Image 1 (cartoon, one colour):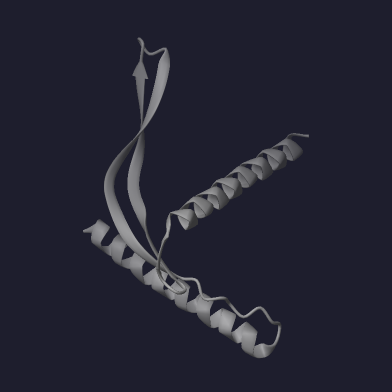
Image 2 (cartoon, rainbow, N blue to C red):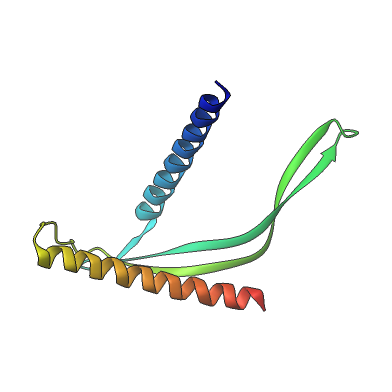
Length: 119
């Protein structure tokens, strides 16, 4: 019984996180500006923070605050060119190429941020 309750809690938390991610993506996409036929521009903020708990009202109330210690504002360009949707080998290879390129670019930017933030 305890195990199934834990699984339900995990599923609920996972669903909540998925919902928040989907909502954030939708908000981000609606904030982009058209700068070309299939090119959109916008920005993201990457924040590094710690959570601090403080007690108030003679220790009866705990208040948690988020203390940001570093923030990065990233300019983002989104290529909105339609992706190939077929199941043929060429379409699959092109989707993989697009995905690999995007992941590589993101990995490179994040590695640079973590390198600079660590110094």
